[in-house]
Length: 90
Length: 190
Ligand SMILES: [Zn+2]
Picture 1 (cartoon, each protein chain N blue to C red):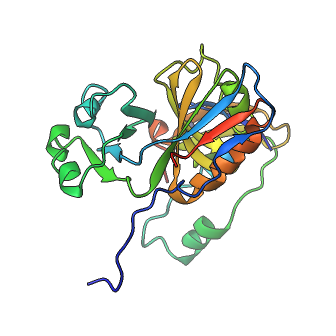
Picture 2: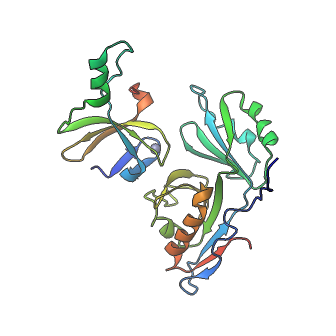
Picture 3: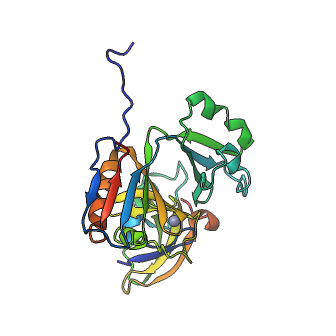
């Protein structure tokens, strides 16, 4: 697991200060999208190897939601942005 | 009516006090339980823009009264206790662009100073506390060990820590431990 996350508001911080929510790429279905779409949204996740975008919450810092793009194999961090800046809050 | 009178007792009233650790060096640490005055948590409304100039209006005018720690989030702190009505009366000063929540009951301040203060705090947090990166007046919310705290620099060799009341004594004890190699004088005000 990547150990230093460069928060755009707080600077580099250890991963212990963050809470990982998971895949930032999924979108919330419409309320009437049906059981299958909602089941997939709530329970089903890919387990990618390589570049992956996730929502991380800076719980013990600025308390902002961030989008962290990291490599699940090498632990490299590519980008960290505020989730609202990208309009990617689910 | 309450069956018994509630007693306000400072969070660090019964904490360890005295001198601990190495006999005097030039780098001794001083820990001070600071007055439980007012602690206001201020949150900006959505899309209210840059409020840097607005927030000091609700403070007491002292240096370091306003402590920013993230986008649209501040603590405004001072030594004087404020009644709920006094805090409520400050709301119009923010012109509807931010809201105030009284945290005076929930968070307390610890002062820590001395020539080795950066080295002591670095045992608990990953934040770079070098004066060039963390100048006087700067604040950061972070973890000290497992305890969440707001660190603010009040001088070249002095900081204040704002910590949840229930964790204050635990952090106090940890700070004494972290300071032992330099020697530490812990002052609870008793
Ligand atoms: Zn942050």
